[in-house]
Amino acid sequence: MMLNRRHFLAGTAATGLVSRPALVRAASATTLKFIPVIDLAFTDPIYATAQVSRTHGFMVFDTLYGMNTRLEISPQMVEGHTVENDGKLWNLTLRDGLAWHDGEKVTARDCVASIKRWAKRDAAGDALMQATDELSAPDDRTIRFRLKAPFPYLPYALGKVSAPVCFMMPERLANTDPFKLIPEVIGSGPFRYKADERVPGARNVYERFAGYKPREGGTPDWTSGPKIVNFDRVEWTTMPDAATGTSAVQAGEQDWQEAMPHDLLPIVARSKSVRTAVLDPLGFTCQMRVNHLQPPFDNPAIRRALLGAIDQEAFMIAVAGDDPAFRHSPLGYFTPGTPMGSEVGLDIFRGPRDYDKVKRDLKAAGYAGEKVVLLVPADSLAQKPLGDIAADVMKQAGMNVEYTALDFGSVLKRRVNKGPADQGGWNAFVGNWQGMDWLNPLVHSTLRGDSAFPGWVSSPKIEALRTQWLSTGDDAGQKRICDEIQKTAFEEVPYYPIGQYKQPTLFRTDLSGIMNGTAVFWNMKRS
Image (cartoon, rainbow, N blue to C red; front, side, top):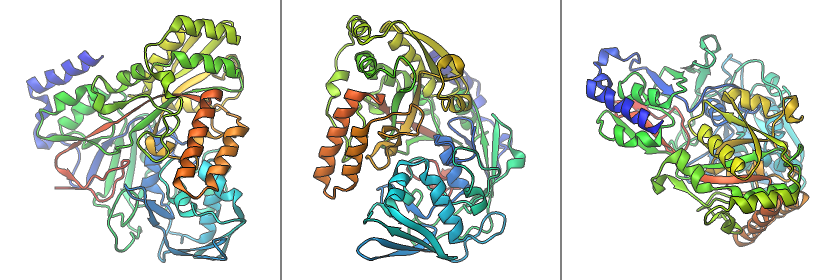
C-alpha cells in the first residue's frame, strides 16, 4: 500500500497533474475546501464522541468557556463568572447578543439543559453534576451552580476540548435523550450546518453565520478568544483513500487535508504549493477496547494474559511509519510527557513478545478458543492499520479472531450493542483518541471505573481513586494517585494501550492563520 501511494503521487507529479492551472480550482476566495479525517457519520457531538463529530461541533455550536493551546480556560459565551459562599455558589453570566441559528435568543435555560445532557455522557460532566446540589437559570443571562462542595474544575469541565465537549444547544434539542440523536442541527456557533446539502459518505457543507457575535478583545488561540470567520462557506469532502486526498490538495482542488498519510511526507515535501504541520503536539493515544460483559474478556485473568501479546511498536509503525519522531511507545493510561503521565507497569510492553508464553498463559487463565469478534473501521486512515495489527497479535497468541471490517459509522453503531457477538455484539475494537482526552482522571472517559462507554468497565477501585484525585489539591498527590490508577489498570485491564503517534496535516501555502490544536475554521484566511 505504501509503495502504491508513493508511486501514485510520484507519477502524477511527473506528468504535471499536481500543478494544474488555477482555473481548475473549484474553491473561490470565499470558499474553503476541507478533507476530514473520516466521514461525518453523526452530526450530534454529544451522542457521538468521534473526533470528526467534535470538529463539526466546534463549527456549529459554541461553548461557555474556551481552551487555548496551553490548556488554559477563558470565558467564551459567558461574559464572566462570580464565585461566592466559599466556592459553593457560581454565577455565570452570558454575553449579550448571543443568538441561535434560527434567530432565537440564547438563554440561560438553553445552557442549563445543554449542560445536563452533556454531563450524562462525559466523565468531567458527571463529576461536576455529582458535586452540584442545584443547577438553575434564575434569569435569561445567569447560569447558577449551587454546589455541595467546592469544585474548582468547573470552568475547565465546561471549556475543555476533550470529547465530549460541553456544546450549547437550544433547550428543545438539549432535552433529547443523550443516547439518541438530536432531530436537527441548530447551534449558535460561527457556522450554520447546511443539512440540505449533505451527501452521506461524501459531503457536508457549512456557511458563515452572519448573526454570530465573536468575543471582543483577546487573542484567537484554538477555541478561546474571538472567533473571526473569513470564509463564507466551508465544504467537507470525504475521501476514503488518503492518497487521493493528498493529490487533490497538491492539485489545488482541495485546500486542506486533516490527516496527511505519514508515508507520503517525502513526496509532498518537494512541492512549494503545500505545507505540512503537526497541529497537536500531544498527538493521538490509541487503545484496543474489549467487552467486559461478554466472554472471553469478561475474565480479568484472560485480559491480563493477553497483555504480553501487545506489541505497541508494531501498532505505531503500522500507523506512523518508521520515523520515531512521529510515534511513541510504551504508552500507559495517561498521556506521556504531561503532569499525570506515568511509567508504572510499562516494562510489560518492553522487549520482544513471547507468543508461546502468552498462549500458555491464556489457556491457564481459562481461554478455550472462544471466537473474538474484532470490529475494524476499514475506511479510517489510522484505525484500519491498528485493527490489522490487533488481529495479528491476537492470532499469534492463539485466539480465534473474526476480523469484521465495517465503515466507521457502522462500527459506532454496533459497538453500543451489549449483547453476545453472535447477536450483533462484539468482543474488541480499536480506536484513537487525542492526547488531551487522556490528560487526567477528570477527563479520561474510557478509564472510568464506572463507565457508560462501550466496553462497560466496572472497577470500584479505579472509581474510588478517581474520586480521591478530584479532592486532592496538590500536584504531587495527584501524580501519586495516577500512578496507583495505572497500577490498578494493569491488574484489571479496562483496555489495552497500544501506542501514541503524531498526525501531520496538509494544506495549501496560500492559507494562513491555521491554529494549533484541533482543526477549527476561524482566524484562517487566504492570502
